[in-house]
Length: 76
Length: 145
Image 1 (cartoon, rainbow over the protein chains, first blue to last red):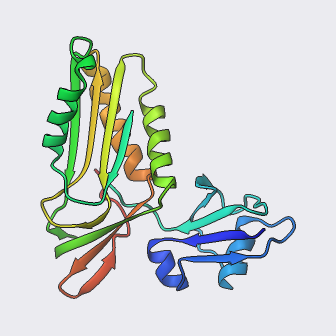
Image 2 (image 1 turned 90 degrees about the horizontal axis):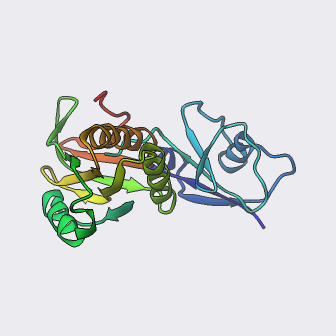
């Protein structure tokens, strides 16, 4: 399995990719997944979802999870 | 609770008329209907905007809209909630969002319509990218209200 990492909107533009698969790391947290996928520090304003539900930057991530990073939302 | 994303232009008032014709089960029970319609402006932060692209997170957007509608409408007096939201390319004047709440009495209709709309603005994963004369830009934040 792998961790599927997704990026949306301005975060995708900054990272330069929409989706990256990374190898799971034991005890990984969201910020470790970000670092593994992008090689840069995680901006505290970036929002996170794990398996399509909002999560925190320090939440644990399991093998097979879908982790998404995106900016504040602007719908409506 | 009906939630739909639309990738082409819709008229919120036509949609509402069609919905109320189709949902005759609400007639008689429903004493109040509060409606919010959001449209695209041709200006933002002092700049002319010629069009915009509404990005979303397929799957999560629908799911989050469902969750926030359930939370907002957790009221015995609410009979139905309808949410339509555009995605993709939008032109000024086109409708972006319709929130319609059907309830027994007006208090729940007004309250839940506002609550759904505010939760949508803060939680539903949509992002606007504007087309300006000088290029494109992401909308960084919502207007306060």
